[in-house]
Image 1 (tube, rainbow, N blue to C red):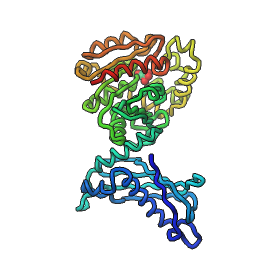
Image 2 (image 1 turned 135 degrees about the vertical axis):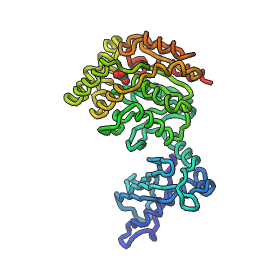
Image 3 (image 1 turned 90 degrees about the vertical axis):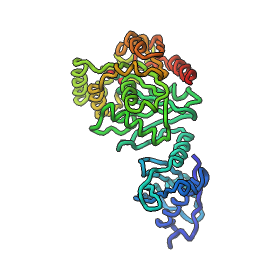
Image 4 (image 1 turned 45 degrees about the vertical axis):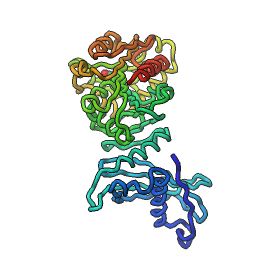
Length: 400
Ligand code: MLT
């Protein structure tokens, strides 16, 4: 992202020579205008008949700045609503990279009569393109929860949804390798580096988080890739936002709901998580999620998955278990996916969602293809990353 550089002048400082707190407001505002000037132009809001009115300001002053200091201002959106948005700004001194001040401005867009109106699409797209170019892990607040999301590359968007109790790093190889696509991998609420609220987990909520996240990133439609629980989320997303999905990749997942036994087992696992913590869940799950070949021949992958699971917040584990227990059956949806290019991937050693189940799911989706990844269990993206990336790449390359 192009930062804005502004110099501190004596007339902005107090009698002790410090940059005055009131002057910060002007500098933050100047930095915002400069950001627009360097992008779509200062007339963006005027063109759309909207005006961003400041509703709330929070500034933290971290260190003093003095005349002659050059400050670097970085601007980013941390929340985007229909008529409001929050811009976070950070000011650092270029000479020593000292953090000088951070600020958050909440804006409400109003028309000339002062009535709230939608945030101009052009503005959101401009800010989103800046973020994509930055290619870093970002934090976005959606539905009241702060999510970590990694965005890499330019091009049509691919959204990667991980399983339970995992995080976005299961897609590391695909995120690095699938050039020519804008790759988006969030941590679902309750997992990875995202916030883990105590309550509020369901497939509907996970899917709504993803839709809101795409809105914030300025992305209309995606190729949706879901692994295991990520596949359950994908089915929910399709139920509500089919028009935003231009291709589907289902990895080691199933369309059926939990059986009565499986539901009981979810509650038992939740009790274990509450009593013994995430480590106990990781120990119990490792032999189930990883294939025999990985367990025997790839200790680094075993340790990586163990650490990922053990780091999952208990609230996120318990919430995901309840969400999976209560998810609806999506089998009836499969024939209706006709016309949506679909790839099903499964590891040949997956005991949780075995190849036979993947095959019957593929058969139920008109036109879908199945790729079986050899010597892999439930997590082919990690266990056989190259083969899995190749399969996804070939599918993406064939999309209309
Ligand atoms: C997952 O990998 O997401 C879980 O194994 C899914 C499940 O337990 O149904």
